[in-house]
Every structure is written in C-alpha cells, then in structure tokens.
Amino acid sequence: MSEATVREITYLEAVREALIQEMRRDPNVFLLGEDIGVYGGAFGVTRGMLEEFGPERVRDTPISEAAIAGAATGAALMGMRPVMEIMFMDFITIAMNQLVNQAAKIRFMFGGKASIPMVIRAPAGSGTGAAAQHCQSLEAWFVHVPGIKVVAPAVPYDAKGLLVTAIRDNNPVLFMEHKLLYRTKGPVPEELYSIPLGQAAVRREGHDVTILAYSVMVPRALEAADQLSQEGIEAEVVDLRTLKPLDQATIVASVSKTGRVLIVHEAPRTGGLGGELTAVVAESEAFDYLDAPIRRLAGRDIPIPYNRTLERAAVPQVEDIVAAARELAREGR
Image 1: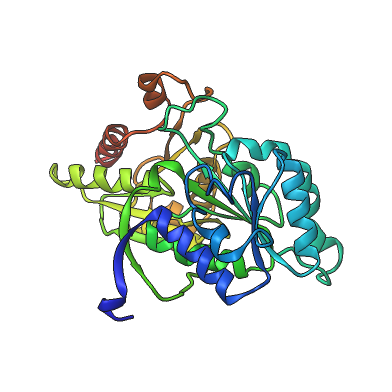
Image 2: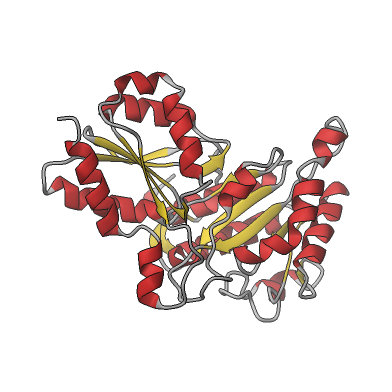
C-alpha cells in the first residue's frame, strides 16, 4: 500500500466505495432497499449509484422490510450476492422471520449444499434525536442466532475493508453502521482491500485497564483513555470490530496483561453483549490475572428518549467511561 493511494474520507464514503468497487468487480452483487435508488438512501450512502448501475442492480423496494429480506434471501439462494439496506436498524424487527428462521438456517439445513451470501446493512444507534423507534442497537439479538455473522466497524478503514469481506462471505452478515460515525474521517486506501472477520484491533496500548468496545464506543473509549492518561492511568482500548465471530484471543491477551477490564457498549445492559464478553473473560485463563471484578458500562434499560439531554444520559458518554475506568483502575490497589 503506497502513501499516494491513501486519502482521508468519511465513514459514509468508505461504505459507498466498498459497495461500488464490489459491484464493479462482481456482477452478482446488487443492492435493494427503501429509497436507495432515486433518493440515494436515507443517509445518502447509495447516492449516485443508480446512475452507474441502473435499476436492476440498485432496486428501490416497497416499504416492507419483510419483503426486502425475503427477496434478498431468495436471490442469495439462487447465486446472487444481495446487499439489503434496513433504513433504521429498528425496522429489522419486521424482517426477523426471514432473517432468523430462513436465511440463518438454510445452509445448515441443506448440509452446506446451499449458501446465503447476503449482507444486511443496518444504520444503528442513538445520538441523532430520532427517539425510541429509530435509535436502537439490537446486535445482541443476532449474535445469539447461529448462522448470522455480526460486524460493527468503528473507523472508515474498517468500514470499507470489512464490508468487502462481508459481501464475499457465503453466509448472512449483519453489518452495523452507527449513524454518528458516518461523518467521521480517516485514512482509507483507494484500492480494493478486505479485512478478515474475527480479528479485533488494539487501538491503544495500555497496562492499567482494558476497555473493550465496538462501533461508536471506540472513539469515545479512546477519548476517555487520553483523559485518563493525564491522571497517570494508561488504558488499553480493544476494538472488537466483529462481534461474531469474536476474537477471544486478543481479548484474553489484553485482560491478562492489564488485570482489569471495562466492557462498554451502547445497547441496554440486560442481555447485552457485555454479558457474553464477561463470560469469555471469566471462562479463560485471563480470569486468573484479574485484580478487580469485571465491570460493564452499558446503555440504560429504557427506550431511547427523544429529549436530547435524556438521550445522552441513556447511553455511555466519554465522561462515564472515564469515571468507570478510573474507579476500576484504583480498585484493589
């Protein structure tokens, strides 16, 4: 990779570039979803793609997530590689039967003779003032379902590379795009590249406490780590990147090194991914290195409020991560 081919682009542009380059490479890749063609998508990700690829490959659908998921599953079963867009992750609830009872299970039920190479793009998360029905983070539901992979990139570089991998995978992949990350910028190569699923990234080295995070909580954890460093607390920030498959080795290695772990996610605490991550640590050799109890910092068990102040209070912010990590770093000393 040469420096001349790397530029700073937004997370949104990285997602769009992955889609365009994969569609140019493979004629079996096509898009479907509500308002993705003429309108260019609710967040503008697919803007301009209808003009290049035409209505056969950029398909505006009826307002029916069940129909979108059913059509994508059928197309994938017949050898196509559909990328379906759920306008807001919340609306994935309407497509649960097609995704959970059909797409996730077909490869297993047919003994591997059939595959479902499809991607479900899902703008997720709070912070936009869109209230309870447009701001949810439902990743734990799908991590629980055998047959579906779950990806949650935090930076533009990963958004492009992981989406390319997801499109080429022969299994259904839920690709979560946090709405607050769309305008964030980072270095992304122009060339087509892929990032393997199941590999976490250590975004910041540290020795006092491990912070496990994904999606929008990664930049918040990094900002918190910078503040903690001024107090003499060096936090290691691990970006999970893919939630299923999960890179347990990197998690265990980091926690074994620091002896403390703070798990941060936006989704509600009860039944959230934090519980699974807690079990991963507790059931591994990292448990013997713990100097303090495992701690979770997650969203409150409430629907996301419309009021901006209440919305902010409903999910972890930088100051919450700082306070939790500070308390954890001092515990047991």
